Length: 122
Image 1 (tube, one colour):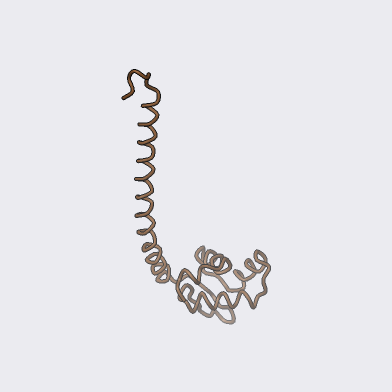
Image 2: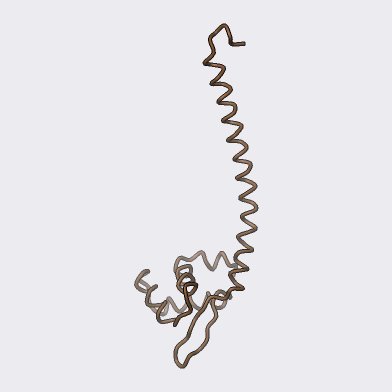
């Protein structure tokens, strides 16, 4: 699954935020998400599995507790995906800026011409 598809779900984004703040037991983050989104523990577990299988989270056992943490390599991959879109956005925003500047220039030229007395207008 593509990184942006994985993070397209608000529950998974929230889980990633919680684990980015600090590594913690699955139950801690699960409780927060259950309250905030009104979903069951098994539903949260499925989201955790998607995040883990897609490489966003790592899991280790401490006795019976499972500790989750963000895998920095997955965030690097995500940054690369966003960078590809940023290049496209920047090109389009630059073009938009040029068109806006042209429009302002044309408007100011038109405005200046219409405020001259009739004898000064071409």
